[in-house]
Structure formats: C-alpha cells, structure tokens
Image 1 (tube, protein in one colour):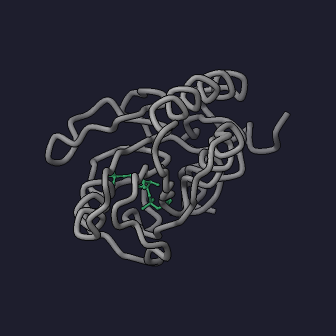
Image 2: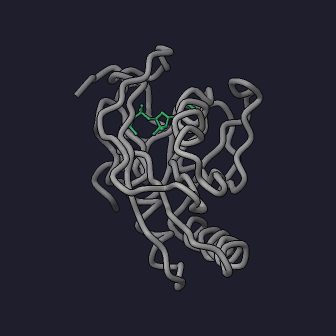
Length: 184
Ligand code: PRP
C-alpha cells in the first residue's frame, strides 16, 4: 500500500482508471493535432504527473513549455489572486497551443492563462485538464479536453497537493479530516 493511503478518506480515481482514460484522451489529441504544429503548455506545479503521462502517449512532433502560476497559497480554497511564477519560454505566435493543467476548479487560472496567451497571437489555443470540478467556472470557461469530471470535493494526488504534500500519490483521493487538521 502507498504510505499516504492511510491519510485518504476515499480513492476517487485508481491508477488503472487513470491509465485507461489517458490512453483515450491521448488518442483524441493525437487525432486532432495530427496535421498541426503542437505546442503543449503545462501549468506548474499540479500538472507534472498528467503532462508526463500524456507526453509519453503522444507520438507526433511537438514542443513543450511550462508556465508557473499559483492561486491557492497553501490553503484548500482559492483566494482569487494569481501570481506568475514562471513565464513562457517558447514563441507561440502562429502555433497551435494546447494548455495542460491538473484541475479546472473556479476557472481563475485558465481564464488568466487564456488572456495571457491570446496576446501572443497563436494560431489556436485549446485547454486540456485532467480533472474538472462539477461547478460553474469563471466566465463560463469550458475546457476542450477533460480527463474526468469530479464532484466539488478537495482532492489530492496525481500532482494535486494539500499544503504542497501528496503530489506524488499516483492516484486521486480525498483527505481524511485528521490529515487536513494535521497541517503537515
Ligand atoms: C491549482 C491547480 C490549477 C488551479 C485550478 O493550482 O493546479 O492550476 O489551482 O484552480 P482554479 O480553476 O480555481 O484556478 P495552484 O494555484 O494550487 O498551484 P499548484 O499547481 O502549484 O498546486
């Protein structure tokens, strides 16, 4: 058993479920971008596991870059503020950009990333999120590719953190109240 399993109340998505869904998602992306010049832009830090697992399933030519933004500041609720921690390195003008993130929650992050990218005049910008919370998003934001739709619960694992912990859990779950109270 994974040592962090004891801190979980419930496992929402197993490693096997994630593997299967990613196989399908990658096939969809591969099909849609077969004739295009794809630049993946992953949002730090939560997307690390998702982008790595997605990348190894995409056989076509592509480029990868990262953007760092942070909104949670170590709490389980979004504060509404966004901090840019790492700027884009690649030129995305006239490129087909696919933004990859771990979770679409309030939409604050991706709405801001969209505005930032649009100024750089890409050919196209689409959004791929591993998880989408079943709540209304800011500006009615819609992702183009979604791994899983989940209820409005605070989840950890597969890149997602609670106070920067649990990102290395290879599956997704909810924390027990004791683990939240412990504030590692
Ligand atoms: C989390 C998550 C998403 C964003 C989603 O990032 O990784 O990027 O919040 O929430 P939103 O839709 O309400 O904007 P966080 O700011 O916690 O940074 P992290 O990826 O470093 O954990």
